[in-house]
Length: 433
Ligand code: COA
Image (tube, rainbow, N blue to C red; front, top):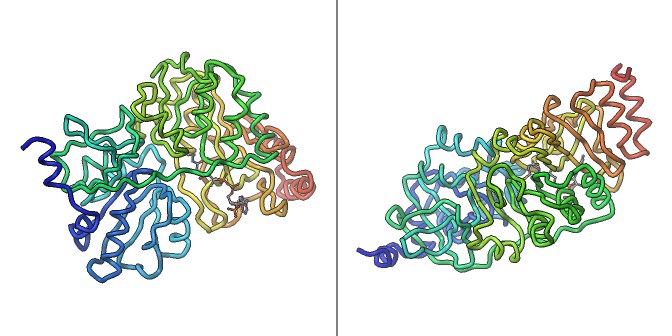
């Protein structure tokens, strides 16, 4: 049978694919654009009609809410989030979905060692003349999932760009596939307010020409990107490829010319952003989407001199413990790659890690620099790894500083209206010498 005949033989509908799934099965998809919503919705519909139960679905960074992660499906279809978007965030806080603690770099090995995977489900780009599908914009964890899964179900989407280095799946290994040419999810453009722009400019001053960058999720990493347009010979080595990076490439600030590895290439584990960005990635030899266990390995990151990592946070305490995952016990996000990049950046020669955020939340009623984290808050980056903390009031260098020095530096970049009470708390704790 030639590849096209095999393709036609395996071509079916999302509903038929859902009918393959058996009670007790564990299914998983890779991150962001890889989540096959038509197959997921069909699985959900089968569960709703009492045709299926006891199914577990692992997702990473859902980009739109999955209707079945709701109370109605509790106990029948259990979502497990490895890095929540908005839908999974609500499901976890509602008690209908579970959470897998993990650094992003470790996800492939955790899947390999601990998850008995029945089905890999994913959006892929169309089959090539050799019979291969590409996982599109995802290097990420697909290779590990594909090695582990007993069955492979694909949702082929003509709109999925094809990164040349993304894992390839041969038609011979596919159990069944469907065609759904839906528009890819795009992120709305980030609103850059005055505070984000101020923070972006503060960090940009710390970044020399020739540095290699990782920018995390959120308005502030985007603002940093925008503030770097006048730099030259920058490189990109990041987990998430973002729109601000396309901007930096197209304006000539990024050329990847000084990178010691993957010279002249932009390296990432996955992409999520605009249609313009997806067009940029498609068939572009200058973009390498690679496995996250390699991309996010601090040892790989540290090979780049002057590595600059920029991420966001929800709260930071006097020790410099960074919470980027919860507000108290309320779940917001997975760990993602924050720690991978903090560790990589601080071991890179000349490298720096910046954790940046506005000094306050909730209309200036809450200071994000606090004496102790809110009870239940998750420590994402620990006190022994943290490097620079940045707000619109400046930079606090914490690495290599004593507790007392940290407290003073942090209070100096807190919002002025909270500085007295923070100072009072520090003195009461006897940590301001
Ligand atoms: N107390 C109470 N509420 C707070 C708060 C605090 N200390 N800090 C933030 N909030 C609220 C904000 O008001 C906002 O609420 P809203 O959604 O109702 O507007 C919400 O929490 C999100 O805060 P925001 O400042 O908009 O954060 P962000 O969108 O820039 O994302 C993280 C912040 C930390 C969740 C995000 O960076 C993330 O996912 N981190 C994961 C780890 C990581 O960094 N991975 C590597 C990057 S890929």
